[in-house]
Each structure stands twice: as C-alpha cells, then as structure tokens.
Image (cartoon, rainbow, N blue to C red; front, top):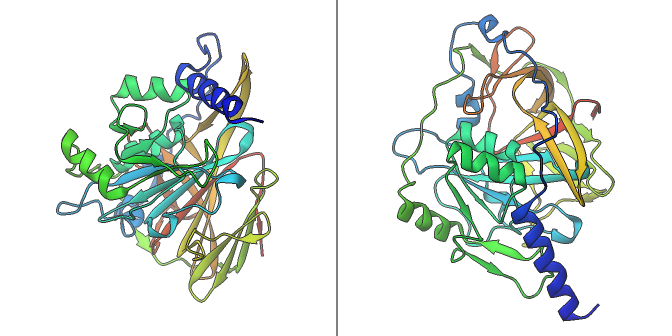
Length: 335
C-alpha cells in the first residue's frame, strides 16, 4: 500500500474517531443498585491506599493521566515504568487499552498516545486527574462535554505531542509529561483536586493465600500474566515479558483485578463498547505474594472506588499499583 493510500486511511480513521457513531437510539446499561456502602466499617478511607502510590494531598502536583496504546504494533511502549498507577480496561472487541497516571515529575516520552473512553474518564474524575489523549469515542466526547472534564486533546492542544517517524500511524504519537504539565499550568489546572473518601473503613495488611502468578484471559495477543518475583509482579503479555522501549520490565508492587460488566455493539461501520465501573462488584488483590478476594463499590462518576476484603476492611497496598479491569463473565487463574 502506498503512502498516499495510508494517508487517506489515517485521515478517515481520525475523522471517524472525531465524528463517531450515532448512539441516540441505543439502550443504556442497567447499573447495579448501590446500597452496600453503609455496611463498610468505620476507620480510614481506602482511597488513600492508591494514594500511597499517587499522592493526592496539598503540596503535590495534580495527577496527570495519559492514554497509552496497547495494540501489539504499539509495543514496546514508553513511560509505563514511571507511572504510579496504571489502569487496564477493555475497549472495543475487548482489546485492553492503558491509562498511565503520573504524580510529581514524569518522563520526557510517554506513549504511543491514543483516544479515550468513558470508563477511563470516570477513573480520572475520581482521581481528580487531567487526561491527555488523542481523540475519543463519541460516548467519550459526550462525557467530556457534559461533565466539563479537563483534558489535553492532541487535536486541540498539539504542541506537547509529536509523531515518531520510525513507527507507523496511528501507533506513533508520543507526548512529553513536562510539556503536558506546562499545558496544565497554562490552562489553570495545576492545583490538585482533593476528593472526599467514599466511606471511612479500617485498614489492614493483606492476609491471604500464597499466590505467585495470575493469568488474565484478555483477547488473543493481549493475554496477561503477572509473576511475583522478589516483591514485584512482573508483567507478561502474549507469552512475552512486557518491557518498555529501554528494555526495562514493566512491573508493579500491587495488582488489582476488578471484575466489571462489559458490552459491545456495532453502530454503522464502527464498533462501540461500554464498561460499567459504577455500582459494586468483586475482584482480587495481589500484593506481597498473597491474593485476597475483594469487593468494590462506586456510587457515582466522581466518587472514589472503595475496595474491601470480605470483612469490609480496606487493604494497605504498596505502589506502583496496576488495576486490570476484566469482563465479569471471565475468570482469572491464580496459582
């Protein structure tokens, strides 16, 4: 295929992403009723557990969340090892995409950067983070417009981004975190947004069964395995050690598996997806070589997600933290 044809395909893809499908006649997801938060025991807020990895206090920089491509052609990525928190959420065809969250500082090169979906925007809202992305799905744009989400879209704020000519579009867009932070400063978004905790619950150290490996059944080419090695969970993707562009293994101190409802459908020529991160559900936490079953609760878009053990107590989770959202009709394998 010639360069002209590639350019035409790229322009069509960008136009489709900006216009998006007509979703006015599609049914809404029926969210699980939220009524279990009152059962949480008094104590300290769980939201601070993720905050141990990403400080969300006065005196710290506002969190910055960057959408990162996870297509096989986008690997190896840049910047994931510098993130304090990474969210992995399935989008169309259940292919997972990544959102890397940065506290103070950040790398000069992060990416490849891709478009955003509402589930990522919900996570960013509860963190009070500014989102850096390149376009969005139509539901994503609706979410941004209706809730006035602070975002740095490459389409409208291009100067923190650039194309790497050594890679093919659309898997070659990168951003500089220092430049993105300068864009935040110019927009008046540099001050941290402090969220109230969902409830006050007691903390405790994780006390579970020994588990050195967990497999996540994402789509072919995206299968994930975390292996516990000397206090860290090394990440493997499609049977290979996940490494960044510098050859460093991608790893985390804590892995959170969050089961959530996923649905997808076709609208015209485009695939559309939706992930329900509101309500309540189940999951797993792996930290320190043990696994603990958990429940999660989220009452609204901007409410912090609370994760508790079966007794309703929060867990002390060392960072960096990696949260993998898995469709609730699948089950991970723990060894």
